[in-house]
Image (cartoon, rainbow, N blue to C red; front, top):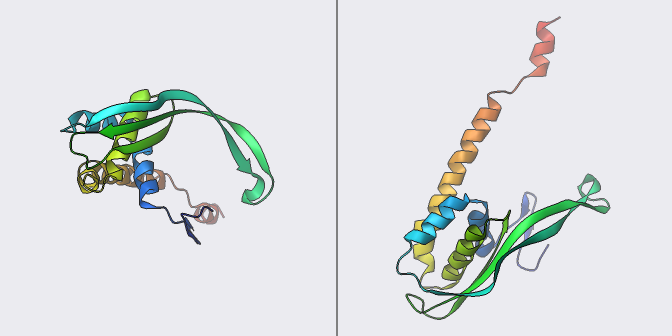
Length: 163
């Protein structure tokens, strides 16, 4: 656990930034890019790092508490930007790491992260970008769970029918 999170029986409690970055990283790339294209007025964007793609090592544990081992590698794209001018009260820096190689997704997510770090812009970004993406993700997850539930087989009842 990190110093910024508190653990619960269900897992660690995420900070607000971790929550919005999870939303931006897991949202469809087209949705994040479209939201950035619609955003007005746009601040000036200075690229600090990337967007660039590379590999990260995925680690796992045996029985969730045992020894760690290297599971494999995943492609990740990262971007770090500084936003200035425009609607910002001060320069803001944002970073994003996205699974895959979509550089536009990483860049747009980093820009939104920087806007979310600005106290004056945060309410608007949450209302116009993050909340709709969370709602869409919840709807999709609910639909997928319902579809999976429809294929559930109760083996206890099946075995009783064949007796």
